[in-house]
Length: 124
View 1 (tube, one colour):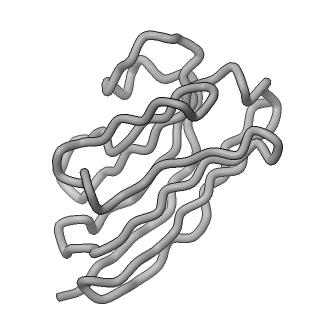
View 2 (cartoon, helix red, strand yellow; view 1 turned 180 degrees about the vertical axis):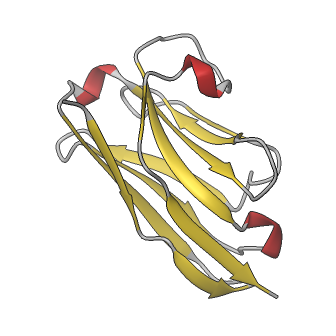
């Protein structure tokens, strides 16, 4: 059984930082690209960041570029999202997802496995 478990969410003031983690089990982590998505109330799930299998390539949504950093530790089966200079618009439930395909995609339905999400709330 594949499990992706996010942690590290919480409430912060604008300008603050959070580091999300996603621990994976039940899959060969190193052969999956990993992504972070977010969904705010009443909005569609949107792409935030993606990291390749080896961690050598990363991709970001324009809205988070320069503020968020995705990384992974294949020895720990964990992917991270460091979020700095948070803004109220970053408020959402954040999900990690695993994609076995090598094709770069920002489309949620292309990802194979999903976590349950962790809430991030940024107050002004």
